[in-house]
Structures are given as structure tokens and as C-alpha cells.
Amino acid sequence: MARDLNRLFDNLRNSREVYVTKDGEVESADEAAQNAKEETRQEGQPKARTRLKPEIFGRATTPLFVAHTVLVDAHRLAAEYAVETGAIGVGPDEHTLTELIPSGPNAKRTTGSFVLDAEYLQPLLERAEGRGLRFVAFWHSHPPGCPSPSETDRQAAKRMLNDTEWGLSGHLYLPISVRRHNGGFDTRFFVARGPNATIEEAPIVVTSG
Image (cartoon, rainbow, N blue to C red; front, side, top):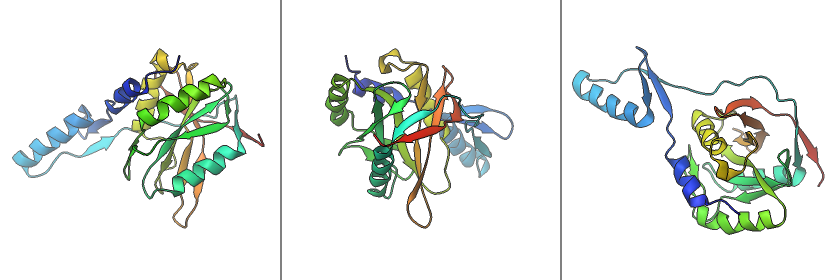
């Protein structure tokens, strides 16, 4: 049975980035914004804050088999928007990616984030599952200079990995297409593993199918 994408994407939208102040206080994104506003009011400027980002560990040992059409579609979809966009990646097993299901006409896209159109994706995911495919990847584009998953990406992956409705087998692939300054895109593949969504770069094998 297909997952309830509206509920799952609501959960993802509730994820929070984590910030650390210069004196070691840990805050959620909402807390950081509120505290910075109060600090500015009282002291004239906010404390310095650092946004936590995921560590990139060693390379995974199991490759992801990626159909070459996925790379073509990823770059085509990324080129359609000057801001971020994304898609769900499906395949016949947990280490094979054969198709991207685009984010949909009502997806919300900004220069630093996007929200998939759950109403559009729900029937398409059900159809894909009817053809024996499963959800294996969460692809999205990044602006120039951002070649790795952000802390927001890791938190989204963490929520998926800890929600059994997504049907993941302990890992989620996170391909990212990064816009080049001179045009075009570079796509890198990462994998988030375990309940803490530890991220590492994933080796891939590009196939003709």
C-alpha cells in the first residue's frame, strides 16, 4: 500500500536545522531566529551562530546502479528552474535507481529549498509500486558552491529513515545536482544510513537501462 505522502511531507516540513552560538548554546532554527531578534533589540546585534552541517565519511561499499536516463532527467529538471527543485527516485530494488518522479506543478521552490507536491506524487508513486518499483532516492538540485547535503537534507533523510511507512531498508540515497557557474550541472550521489542518517558519498554504476 502506498504511503500517505501528505502526512509524510508534513513531517518533513516540521524538521528543524540546528544552530550553535559562540558560547556553546544549541538552538533549533526557530529558537535561533527568535533569540537573535531579542539580542538585536537588547544589545544592538545578535550573537554569532554556526549552522551545523553533516560530516562526510568514507565511501560506501555497495554501489548504486543508476540508469543513464536518470542523469539526463535530473539535469533537464534542474535546468527548468533557476531555484531548487526535486523529485522522488524509484527502482526495482534498494540499490537500483531507474526513474525520477518530478516534484509536481504545485511544488514550492526557492533558492534554498523546495517542497514536493504530495497530491501530484501520490497516484504516480502508487502506479510505480504497481509496476514493482520502490522508493529509493530523494533527488534535488543545489545552487553553485553547495555540492553536499545540507543539515536540512540530513534531517529530512533522518525522518524518512525513522518512519516505517517509507519502507526504507536502513538507507536512503540523496543525489544532488549542483548548478555550475558557467552553466550545466554536476550530480553527486550520497547515501544516508541508520537512524541518525549518517551521510557518506555513494559510488554508482551507470547503466544503459
